[in-house]
Image (cartoon, rainbow over the protein chains, first blue to last red):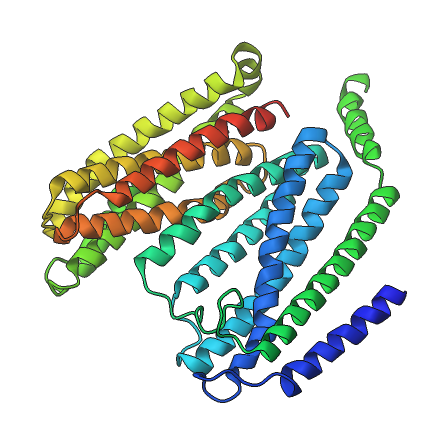
Amino acid sequence: MISKLLLTLWMTAMIVAAFLYAGAATGFPGQTSRILFFHVPQAWIATLSFLLSMIASCMYLAKRSVKADHLALSAAELGLLFCILATATGSIFAKATWGSFWNWDPRETSIVILLMIYGAYFALRSAVPDPEKRRVFAAVYSILAFVTVPFLVFVVPRITASLHPEDTMNPAKPGMDPKTLKVFLGSLLAYTGLFVWMLRLKIRLLRVEGMREPEFVDTAMGQEEKLGPPSE
Amino acid sequence: MFAVTTLVAVSFSIGSFRIGDAEKPFLYSVLLWIILVFSALSGLSRSFVKEEEAGTIDVLKLSARPQAVFLGKLFFNLTLLGALELIIVPLFILLMNYKIASPGLFAAMIISGGFGLGAGTTIVAAMIAQASARGALFSVLSFPLLLPLMITAIKGCERATDGMNTAGWPEVRIAVAYTIIMIIMSLFLFPLIWEE
């Protein structure tokens, strides 16, 4: 309860600070650079949850514990949500600065592929009826998709120049305003906190659903159906 | 057949004179790879579904090691892709009046791209054989995995067509690396799918 309250306060403080405390970066039209405080943490969470989902998938394949699968599924769902948010906010920024919502910038390409991977992951999960099989397939696909990502990160940017503001807004490089940096890191923390909280909620929800419908009922019913015809 | 139909449709609607010379290298390589990838996707999805439908999959599980089954299917798919490319690529060159400045790089790109296509899709075919809505699911699952390869292959063919900056063949090397990584990962992961 306390942590939720703290998170709410922190998040509110960061939103206020993003507009009032930090200054707008130079070189961007108007106030557009303030998207940094929202868009970058969203993209960070989308990537983080993708990584988390992949690690949980590996854990599931090694130990076959349902908990690991719950973690993988929850991370993937939240990842999809944050990925959509990052795409939407990035697209708005693109319209404001580059003049079009979409122009296949390398960053836009890679986030679309991330979206497609998440989409495919859920399509696969919904298409396999057997729960045990579904978990294994989803885990395998998650790992396979993760393996192709480095190609995308290193190959695609080589082919076309990116318009994505990197040098002017990358906190790892000097030249970022200290106030901006403070708010940016704070916002990153707030988003990560939000992510952890949502992740735990989702995992609890999955666990409760699992209790309500134990899996052995499924298989037992399946066997009964199979055994049915010969006895009749 | 699907491949030839697409090729004829593309060739008929675009022809070889509608595109300016400056844009030919890029547009032709895009068209060629779209035809190749989508005809490959329509054919390769069948490799494990066939076993499932014929009911031979259980015998196969009992009689062979999973790695052996995977490699067998991979070679089958690669042969299929080779045959497909052997038909499509010369036809495409003829129909579209495609002039290639460096044929060696072009051939290497087509071959290594084909290997990548086979390596990336065989394990997906094994998964969808046990799922519902197979055909659609195969494309949905394969496409994100193939996209890095496709972008590389298109770039490589474009480079081969205009004959500029061909030193080192970086795209071919990327495609080969992709193929190797996909085959190794599949060899690790395939037994998990197979024994379910």
